Image 1 (cartoon, helix red, strand yellow):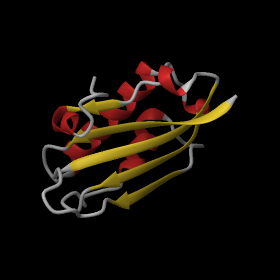
Image 2 (image 1 turned 90 degrees about the vertical axis):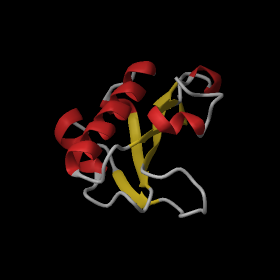
Image 3 (image 1 turned 90 degrees about the horizontal axis):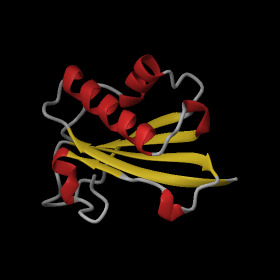
Image 4 (image 1 turned 135 degrees about the vertical axis):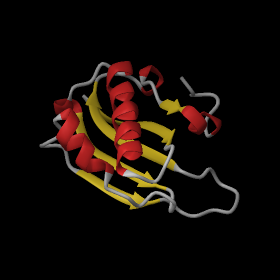
Length: 121
């Protein structure tokens, strides 16, 4: 078994709890379903948010809504680069798997599809 990374990103409609919660659950759920994962397959999850999203910690929603009680998680502010995508939540999920990197599905939703057009679902 190997430790592999799965990337995901989604844009958030508004800087409020409901919008961030909805985007977090939508992105994580899609990452789990596309890769046929359960929470016990996950080593850790890192969330990064652009500076215009500061209403809540997305890890809270993963714990409360998806049962990530035993998954180590951290939240960070994304580097503020000029002309970069705004209102964006990014996820780096490390998992234990026998799949090769080419078999993993990275998930880019809504406005974040422009970040990796080659990987967008």
